[in-house]
Amino acid sequence: MPTFETTARFARDFKKLLPEERARFQETIRDKFVPDVTSGRFRPGLRGKQVRGFRFPPAYVPSWK
Image (tube, one colour):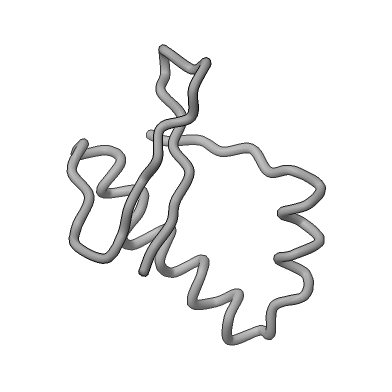
């Protein structure tokens, strides 16, 4: 099961989102990003960039179009 860490910058940016935007972000991470990381394949429109320096377990940063 993927785990995560956040940075202070992420927390500040996340706080600035509207409630609807926060809900959409959380839904995307829960329903799309986590399953894609688990399967090792990212769906079109959603990307996961592997973070350098993490070998096991690998770390990914989400991005989307």
